[in-house]
Picture 1 (cartoon, rainbow, N blue to C red):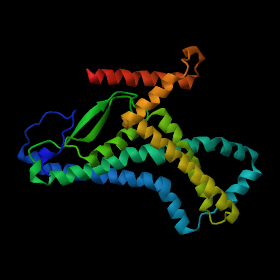
Picture 2: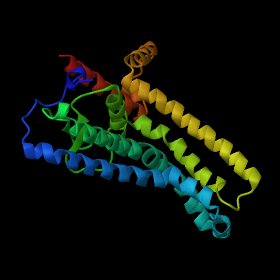
Picture 3: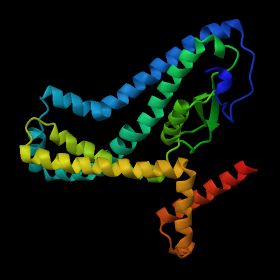
Picture 4: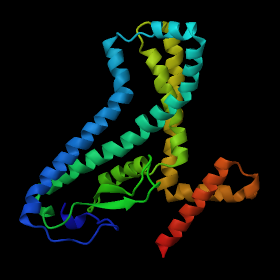
Length: 275
């Protein structure tokens, strides 16, 4: 497959001439970025599934003393109960979903660009480009615009798939964040499952509940994925919403008003892109 066979990104900048020094250093730059983002992805993996896998293989994680401390100190038990929703949010939405989506696609894209930078057929063109996202358009607290880098100039089915995960990680929607929370709660349950001193019956029950929570997250995030990227699915959802009785803004909850405002903004952006 030649460069001409690959579709070019619609938002990629025009081709710029490359000096010999740029062509010589380009593989090193992409290699550094590939190693950096791969390391970040491994860190996030270690905080999520990696911790559970290590605890299971190590067999030395015990929770008996911590549980006795919680039972003997009511204030600690109250603090623990209050912390569970926050931990579920952090681990489900961030550690298990957004951070992997924000790191592994960048690592894979950097490796793709590194390999392409070594091939003479790509020497005459740029391989990646960067766009900027305004403050508040990406996840996290940002005081300035955020640079979204390593976007491929030459697209393929593989890079298109990576970019879909890329956007779900860097520009998450509230519904996606919310539906990742059950997986975070499942992670907490599996900490008990892999504990060496957990009763066998409790392990089985929590493992089944955790599997159901993970399945719920997977199914719902799959629907959110289709709502983002499948035009047929999005149009069908819009038709169902239009068939419902129109509700006044004053009758909506705060969450419903935010979702309605987001729908209007997406519709406005689509109309602007069609012009």
